[in-house]
Image (tube, rainbow, N blue to C red; front, side, top):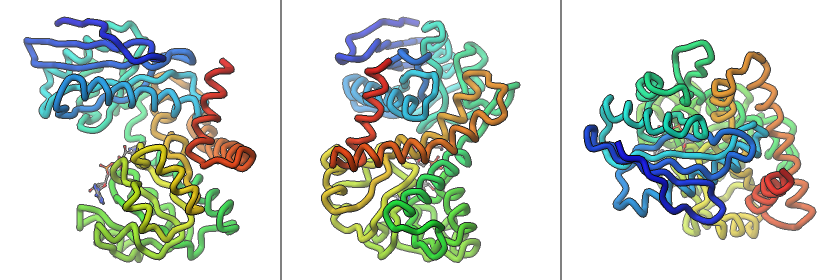
Length: 344
Ligand SMILES: NC(=O)c1ccc[n+]([C@@H]2O[C@H](COP(=O)([O-])OP(=O)(O)OC[C@H]3O[C@@H](n4cnc5c(N)ncnc54)[C@H](O)[C@@H]3O)[C@@H](O)[C@H]2O)c1
């Protein structure tokens, strides 16, 4: 196994590259910041077209984790890893675990796109610097219900702020993606009296939501243009672009998906259209909060719930900043986090 430190972007602590000819592993670990604790962030399996593309992505994602972990007030820094390729094998995951281990705890890994909890169990055979496990004393398991709880609380707060409604009765929410997080979110919304309009690539999930929640099924491409109060993107990233924002008829956007804005200019566009955007990395941080309890071997039973409750307070601080500076929520969130990073 060959591990080398390669050039990273300015402002990043380190970028490590690993090649293991025995298992075919090619992986990168980017450590953006360990200023507030060990860098933490998931491992993504993706068939990048080139090593350069993988480097760009892993660094962008690791910086995003610094912002997410700081906004959630976790004693963790930002990091991320990627495995380059389409397929993984147990031997490859073990080699990846040895790569993580070689960094001596500066980086903790967990699941991300293309990687399952069972892959992380294999990683855990060779390193303690892994979380999101299903077995073990501090195992945190599936973070999705916790993520959904945080998104739900922030959605309710956003509706109160923008629509002046103190509850969600008859509030219309368009949910894109009924997967792990989207399904739980839809269930919380239904229980709170909201009306659901839903879409998913998986038609069985849509049918189930119609049956269980009385949801209205919407064709995939029509979800942006529906008449609703809230749009909740819970599927893919970068779904908000000029074309989709142009179609929106909602007043509020709050969802679980990572990196919802295709670029910072889209945050400005939402702001100019007077659509309230609750920043993704603030509202969806329930997942990393859940994982953090495992990384930190936390015995406090209220660690996760108290931090989920405080997400709406963070949102309020960002709202205050956005109002004071007359800027969009996406810019206010970055400024809020950067002020804390600079203070430290
Ligand atoms: N799982 C977590 O705890 C967590 C935490 C933070 C952020 N997120 C983010 O939230 C999003 C959802 O995560 P998840 O764990 O629920 O994933 P998931 O894969 O379980 O669910 C995604 C769902 O979206 C559907 N989908 C995909 N493309 C679609 C499209 N074009 N239109 C409509 N539906 C589509 C899929 O069929 C699937 O049902 C992702 O962006 C993820 O990165 C998840």
